[in-house]
Amino acid sequence: MPLASANIPQADELWDVARVPEAIDRGRHTTETIAAYIGMKVLRQGHYYTQAARILGLVAEGEPGDEPKLTILGRGFARSSRAEQRTYLRRLMFQREPMRSVIAALRAEAGGLDRAGLAHVLQTLAPLADSTAHRRASTVAAWLVAVSLAAWHEGYLRYTGPNLPIATTPDHGAV
Image 1 (cartoon, one colour):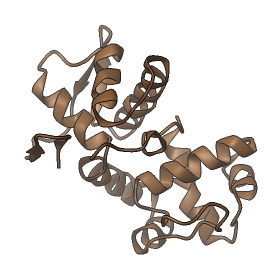
Image 2 (tube, one colour; image 1 turned 60 degrees about the vertical axis):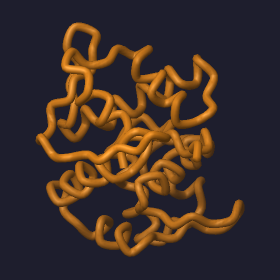
Image 3 (tube, one colour; image 1 turned 45 degrees about the horizontal axis):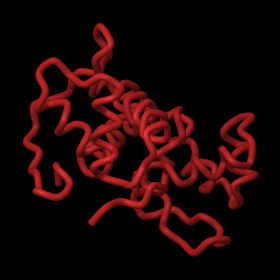
Image 4 (cartoon, one colour; image 1 turned 90 degrees about the vertical axis):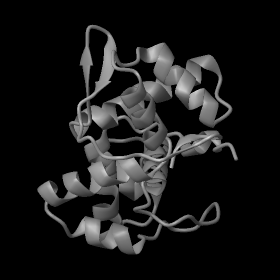
């Protein structure tokens, strides 16, 4: 089953995404107050960053207009040290789409993937226009780099994380 385009992150700074659960835990319950908490983000970015925290499973899914609420994982994450959060985030990258499929694709290509290759992986997961897929590919790549699961080398993103097994399915790659 394809992902909705909203389930492909568009919040570039992973460590700002990591501050969303902290903001909610400290009583910020609108995208505007979350945006202000994580630092000079406009309202639209507050939405993107809150949605990114949902993609990671830190914020519960809700109806449009509902105040964001933390998941059990999100509550623990908000109260963890940065080192513990890094470990959480690395694990979530292996568990959550679209990062899981991007990691599987990177591991399958010894030389790595360029931005077009990353965009293609995302387009196999969700109905994205080329320009949107390229922007979102940059976001996913930045997240993987932020937690040292990948690194850029001569225009190609290469997997640099641990050699953990990742199961795959015929529909969406990794599971």
